[in-house]
Length: 65
Image 1 (cartoon, one colour):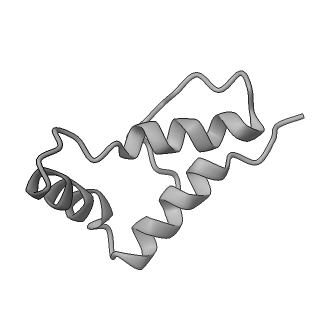
Image 2 (tube, one colour):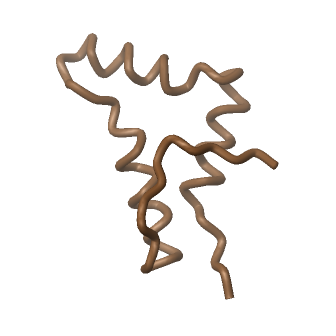
Image 3 (cartoon, one colour):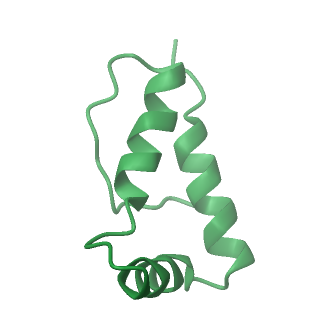
């Protein structure tokens, strides 16, 4: 049985709400504050592992449909 991957849904929601510029906005804010990365991939992996312990990654592949 496949579990719902929360990180994929959050990423899709951010993608829709920001018209596809979510990663760019987050990267800009992170670099403005002195961070090297926005940690979008790490957030997605952490959320997906809450519901699917065997989740292996796959960051950067948004699937809306």
